[in-house]
Length: 140
Image (cartoon, rainbow, N blue to C red; front, side, top):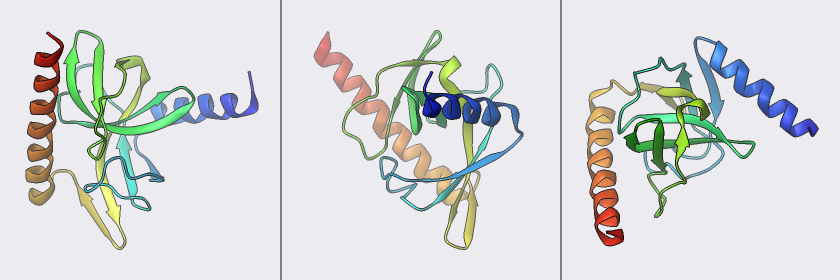
């Protein structure tokens, strides 16, 4: 196991065991809600508190990713960055480290319960669901 793999697994386990974790965003895949340089705040998940539309932190291929859940079927989660055109390969709940609860933009910290963010999240969730349904119809 390489040094980076060891560090990654330690960080992933640490995130899962803490009550709250935060990290700085380094990409723009969740634009416009989350931008490069924003800080995000994560809470651990419980077994059944994930639903379509939730934004999660997960680990895949030794990388941490923050994307939105667009579909849940059995133990499989399909995620997508809000700014991304394509769906991510499905992951399992084992990959999930936590659920986004707040975003710090400059001096302002906004919880996802904030009315503006709730509305924006609902619109993005509905749009992602339409995209998923369209793609599934094209496949079948």
